[in-house]
Image (cartoon, rainbow, N blue to C red; front, side, top):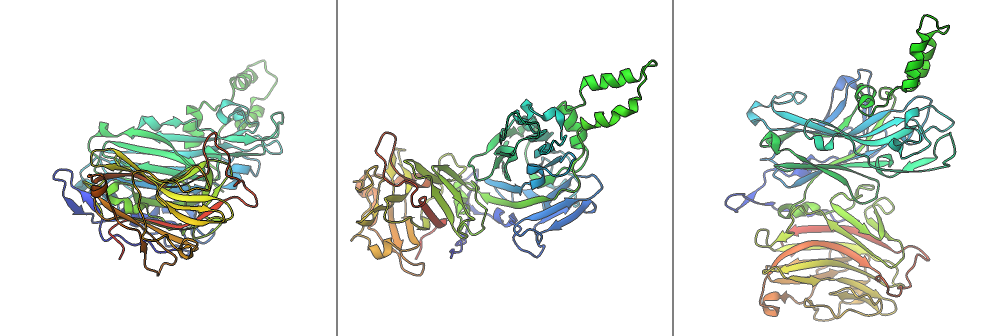
Length: 579
């Protein structure tokens, strides 16, 4: 079972002028919603216009908000009940939005174009909050917006459907034989930097010679799971899109300083395009129009000597026109999540992995030689390594370029995790990559964790070793236990591991076999005694596992009888010390 996140007693903020700690009045995480309660309760979110919403349900598909539009032809937006004032929710923080694509877009169905657009809506205001209207559907003065969409045009073409003929085997759809295309597409007056087609790629499989369309597509805007990201700032906003379990984001920066001082975010959340934007504006901007030869032919039909009826060409011309959005599609909103991403609120990066499916690279960057997901073993992040000689790591997204600066956000600080290790018949390691910096900026490498040597047991390590059957001697930083940690603790499932930074020079490591047990702590290492210096900061700690390096012999791990797996119960960051 997962341990609940230990709620921080306070969140430390640094006042811009005098540098004194203050207390944040509101926690931005409280604005988050995963839509997992089957009671139609989606507070603090609301959707409008209500008279163009046919369906808004958390019960049809558990864990998602199912949305279907009405017949009025107006965009549907999801917004918070109250606007976000930066004075209430101080930076830095992020917003992440997840959708699951409708399979009719991905695989086709029916004979018509399955045109649709869904994505992220961001409305930023630069006006005095005293001028803001009470009606949330009305915009304040001096307000600018941007939307970033996943846009699907046409039909996959299976069984020779017409779709959008102009897209077929074109640069627009990466020369897919299907008459459709998936795009990342931006619009709005907040930033010209994001307007138009982003050209984000995807792959397709099938026969290059067929006229019936491809079998399937994957990646980028054609992926089943789509996620949007916003990183707000006082002068710049970053927005972007990612897909599936593949790590990383395609990000762009919007310079908002041209409008003055940001006073708040009026709207941030999902948007579904249901007006004529696709058929009118996108068609014109992307030059997806009936071909000139067909329009010329119609003119020839209209000459006095023509024996043909020009009306008979209209159905053919219509085949080349972009249609409005398909009104019968459901849209599936997976989550709308806020969290702090700075050193002052790095506790927000704690994760219990207790919401199956919610991971990708939300507040953690997933890197290297593994697949990381939360649905195969609910309650855990399952890290499945590929079995070859390489490394895997998961690193927190900390917006501060200097990591956790002890002069501003000082100890006591703790990092705690619990994990179930792979089979002990094969060598493995699981450790934190710390690049500690002393008060003069010099880097002190330290990698506390656990290493398994088959036939010998599991051992605490201060440093990773590229030789699987030996413990590395370690570098300058060597934390020691009074006695070797008992195998009864080290082989526990899960094994609990704690790193404590007691103050600016002292730290230690702890292990235990059960959540209710006391910690077995190492001796306290004091860098003042060791080096005559204090620790200046922690540079982005990552959890890591590695097997070998370029040119070295393999470890004999492989993927037989099964791929190597780590089940991580939770990762907790916090200010303060455990009792």
